[in-house]
Amino acid sequence: MAERPKRRRVVKSGGPSKKHRFNAFPEDPSAPATAEDRIRWKGFCEIESDPAFFNVMLRDFGVKNVRVQEVVSLDPEMLGFLHRPIYGLIFLFRWRDEDADKQEASCPEGIWFANQTVNNACASVALLNIINNVPELDLGDHLEQFKNFTADFTPALRGDAIGNYEFVKTIHNSFARKMDMLNADLQLKNDACSRKKSKTKSSDEDDAGFHFIAFVPTRGRVWKLDGLERQPQSLGSIECDDWVRQVAPEIESRMAQYEEGQIEFAIMGVVREPLAALVAALAENVKSINVLVQRLGQVKPDWEDFLSESTGNSKAASHETIVGPCEQYQLYADTIDRAELSPELQRRLESDGVIELLTAREEFAAAQVGLRASIRDETKAFRTDNERAASRRNDKGLLAKGLLQVLDRMDKLKSIMECEVEITSKASVVEDGI
Image (cartoon, rainbow, N blue to C red):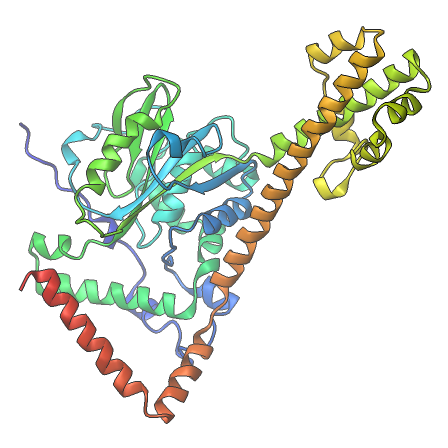
């Protein structure tokens, strides 16, 4: 077996000098980060594995009709709750260098893969490594130009391009709070000092942090795209429609390395945003109801009176059914006009039977209830994502400082800190098996 090539330590690489990184915020460190602070700062902040944050990032990037969902389990029944198609999976875990011998010799043609060459950029790198490998996606002008510009780059150069692309960096760092920036800079400084003191391999691997990687089906194969690895890793040809089944053993093997009760991983699915399809279905539904009403008027002009006498409440039900544009459901006249009628409905429109036409109309009215409920659910999820992202972006440094000062004046802070130290010490003893 050939000698294992040395891997570039991209997780700790790059970055500006100490002069620019470690004295970036000379003012009160508890003061909220300003937009100018985020632009001036040269790093990337850590982002938690919350689908809401990734969804807001995708929308800010300009990507259309894509969303991120949490994957609770890789059990086929639980995976059935994910929207289809599934464009890729994002896996968060405590990183270990285990697959160097399984990587491709070079990045295969047609695969867009970027290394992570900047600390803490793995969230954006994982997202880009997925969406840039789905040809049918609308990436928006910025990312489409970036994808074309970097098409002939090596993975390392693509990673550098991400780190230097202000558009991506600004959106990523919209989640950065002052303490996030200071902690990232302190970590970089400590890492630099540690490497000077110790050149041993173990010192690099013992402090392995959490890391996002991507899995994506493209070009007839399933790929693992880990920005900390030099090249993509093929997991084999796509064997069936449910490609996630091929990825499951890879993820489960990593999950099995953790002790029972340790939750040190998370999985998210990058899927098609269902809202646009639901609105299109509602538009078709409304148009279908309208043409059925028109046909009923031709066959039996007094069909509404006939229906009211038969059921006693159908007129009221008719008023509850949407038959035209409705802003609440993002339904507009041009969307309804563009909707196409199904062949089945066109066949039923040929009937002269009042009962058959009325039955078809009631079926569409009943289906509309479900469509409207689904659209409301998706719209609510959209608002919830924005609220969670806004809360995460809210820098509460001054509030935390004020609370600590109050606790200190009450002589409570010292006892709380001593209690925390004691708890941490006990946890360390248990973990070490002493």
